[in-house]
Amino acid sequence: MGAYEEVFQAAVQDREGFWLDAARALEWEQAPTRALDESNPPFYRWFPDGVLNVAHNALDRHVAAGRGDQAALIYDSPVTGTQRTYTYGELTEEVARFAGVLRDLGVGVGDRVVVYMPMVPEAAIAMLACARLGAVHSVVFGGFAAKELAVRIDDATPAVIVSASCGIEGTRVIEYKPLLDKAIELATHKPGKRVILQRPQAEAAMGPDDLDWADAVARATPAAPVPVRSTDPLYVLYTSGTTGKPKGVVRDGGGYATALAWSMPNVYDVGPGQTIFTASDVGWVVGHSYIVYAPLLAGATTVLYEGKPVGTPDAGQFWRVCAEHGVRSLFTAPTAFRALKKEDPDGDYAKKYDLSRLRYLFLAGERLDPETYRWASALLDIPVIDHWWQTETGWPIVADPVGIEQLPVKPGSPTKPLPGWDVQILDAAGKPVPAGEDGAIVVKLPLPPGAFPTLWNDDDRFVSSYMSAFDGYYLTGDGGRIDEDGYVFVMGRTDDVINVAGHRLSTGGMEEVLASHPDVAECAVIGVADTMKGQIPRGFVVLKAGADPDPEQLRAELVQMVRDQIGAVASLKEIAVVAALPKTRSGKILRKTMRGIADGLDEPVPSTIENPDILDALRPVLRKE
Ligand code: COA
Ligand code: AMP
Image (tube, rainbow, N blue to C red):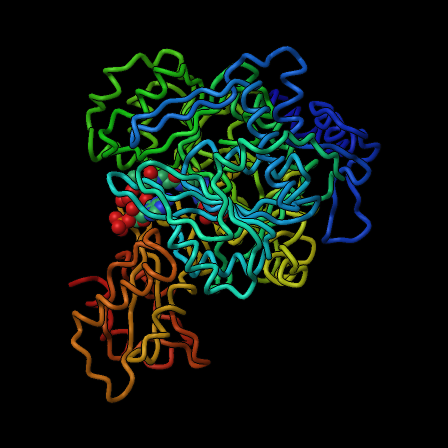
């Protein structure tokens, strides 16, 4: 048995022992005596009698161990020309002070705080300050528009919102404060105070409920970490589901911190004093786990990068960051590498920098196409590790565990499941399919520590969305197969979720926006393959009888509505006005068939189709002929 197999089997044979042992990597106020509470499936709880503070584990613990002078977080911002390093001592102090600000605003255990910020260190400080108080943060990605923010404010009902005056998107300055004000106006729930980080690129006009971050911090006294139950929520992170209403993925403290602490040496091969650069955004799960929590729990150094892979100002920035900060593991989305490849196909920028300390490239967030895998491998000559995970899971489900054993790679597969994940492929009837055949990717319950225990305030949706399709299994929403060697191939979503440039979006949400236009009778949005972004949305609208708008103007209005209501990240730019949409006899729009045709596949016409002529008429539009 290889080392990977041994570790995987250890978690199968003795689940309790394996995870209690992993939990010893943390410092507990009250160490757990049991790993898993299975009394109320599918609501499993990890370390039910454990008590800890996650921020203490991420910060104070390392200072107490004598590592206060080691770099904890390096802020590298080519868009503002700034670099700042926080040692563990300094970051602990900043977090304690900001926790003092929140505490003075009445934030306590279990209270929610919405964080709507660009990629600045204060975003991580705000998150950790919440964790320090036992409060629950809910970070909203800065690329979401006011309405999306409002929906999240209404669901999370925060006591306080933390934001900034602006973000910098490439070369543009995006003012956040007007978006925040608009969101609060749209929301039914009115949070008390908001703390605003003023940035020199665009100062915000402050209202009576707005506190200036710098003033508030200067006045505050540091707050001590508050021990909370392991099962208490650490954060809520909204993610796109199949409808316009996002799902509030809940993360507990103890299970999550245990899983992350386990993953750092075993998956990412990064230990204390070593540097990981996760080029993502704190608004996504990858940012929560591998920009903020996991590196700090491991006592490593994390790079928080404010910029893009290309254009800020050039395609050499990732390599500059890796060289300057001695990065050991770089983690980003395949789309970033496709952007680099387009801009710098021969990798000339990479050759300018000393990348001798870069040991691994980790890619996730969307399928890693074999061509991008090969290009990145040839460019860097280091292991390129595809790994598969989701907001719901909090850490990878399937990954090459290079800290344990590097498995041989099969391009197109993130290799094998990590310990704790019992991944299986089922057919529509819930029967296991033979090796190599496609089906729904599911995980047998219970899920390991770190995975979501429920959805915020919505146990019913947790069960109906994920736990009821196949009794005893978590429905991942992805389709794919497992080959005869146990390698998992993740081929794409089986629902209406799409991945655009590594951003998870709901086509259902976009359809809701299009359908609200007065001239639109019905519509469909599908995700089609895109060489750069992986997928991009395309919209198809049918006009109401009697409506006769100028098609160009209608398209422009619809595009703008999606930008205004969801955000620019939706990237919906192509909208076609069509006579009718193909449907089944029961009235369901044949989105999968449309997607297949648009992707140039030999898509079979479903036997349930109501009127094949409609599909035939749409074919040239879908294929852009
Ligand atoms: N705030 C405001 N607007 C934002 C934003 C933010 N935080 N992030 C993106 N946007 C805007 C962009 O400016 C762009 O606007 P535009 O249509 O007016 O040009 C739009 O949303 C689409 O952005 P994006 O999808 O990022 O495309 P891009 O062309 O600007 O950049 C990449 C393409 C590949 C360089 C970029 O998407 C990237 O770096 N992706 C990495 C993905 C990632 O980190 N995923 C997280 C999971 S690991
Ligand atoms: P998110 O919740 O934003 O992390 O998006 C999760 C989704 O991204 C998954 O359900 C997959 O569809 C996709 N995804 C993430 N990582 C991979 C990967 N390595 N290979 C294929 N798809 C992936």
